[in-house]
Length: 292
Image (tube, rainbow, N blue to C red):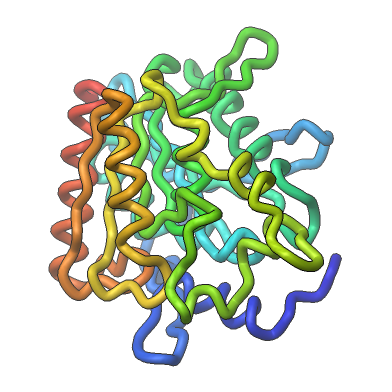
């Protein structure tokens, strides 16, 4: 596996949560006193084994709605455990939250990352009965690069064996939706889009456009909730605002929530961001149907 450049390695930490110029440790790492998630394995299209952490709701719930969680890290880093606090919050609200692996960009070229999360959706849908879940209602929620992949899942479908990979609603947190639209100056210095696209020189605008989920959006795109920090040092608000305008023009239901003081990612230990998490739960309950 190719060794990450130092700047990109730093970004893998910074995309989880930033304060000033220094990256913080993951804000959503597992707590020592929290129950461990159940780990399941699934197979990607190349036959490689990937894993998911399942955050399961209380046993008294009879039929769950599933939310696939997709971590950030600029497509070149990160780990599914970064979504643990969001996963536990969703489980407390009655959802089955599944935080998935996907192949990172330094190991495989786009669209391997998309194919992997599509395989994760198909796994959850085909195993819905044993998970006590409804296969018709699956949402996707991701942070940063995970927001990019989540919007793809709401916009395109790749069924295999009659099992759909499309989700019924999307939550994009600090997401990147247009790869031809620049990040902030600080975000651009990490070169994450060139790393995703395996660009060796000048940007390939056509390839970037084809890898941008907003370009794949149509009137069939799932209802989408954009959550953006007003103090995000890496991804500008325009990434969410412009994507929302495009969805509105297509007639797709959407909402943008701008969170005061929020930087890159969702820190559930900050009151405004916990309030944003409550809004996410409300959105998911409204768009995935009641959890019984």
